[in-house]
Length: 242
Image (cartoon, rainbow, N blue to C red; front, side, top):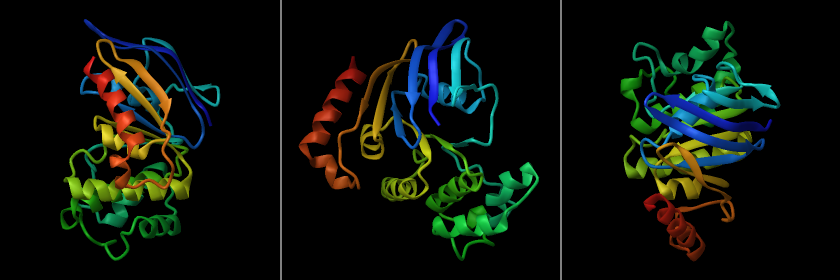
């Protein structure tokens, strides 16, 4: 299900947020989008999600224009956004409930996949930060999206939990095979997760780098000390510093 963005721009007077974004994202890709705050990463994600519209250009999935949000695209935000009065199980089922039909076997299957079994009746305040984020991810997965849009989902976590969640996400992606578009401002995270890297620069937001990440899978944090990783990191840093 290729996603195509052709000459996409987005104007917010008096600042142009994005300019001349051209991307084709192939089915099953883990794309990481890296850039400093204010470079338009989240704006681009909102355009793909259908939460916003470009001032000019075209966005399409399988050739069909993106005009509004759809069940084929689900967003996971930085904050889990769980409802404090609902149990974990009901929070995960919330999207399906709003759609009008709940597949409880699928809910329970995803709870097991996410390692949340035994916590079905817990409220969000009874869960750790990492478990809350896994619950938010589970809520997205039960919608069976073709594209998972992730807007700095681990940024609020401590370093140790963040590394565990990154490893967990890689294992999950290997199982589900969905297209993932992952926004981050962390260079190591962008390289260790993705199989394709887009680096954006600001004023206006534009693509400075778009290249495959030539690191073997499965990935581990030991790779961050290897020459290939460090070479790529240095090249990305030089572009971000320009």
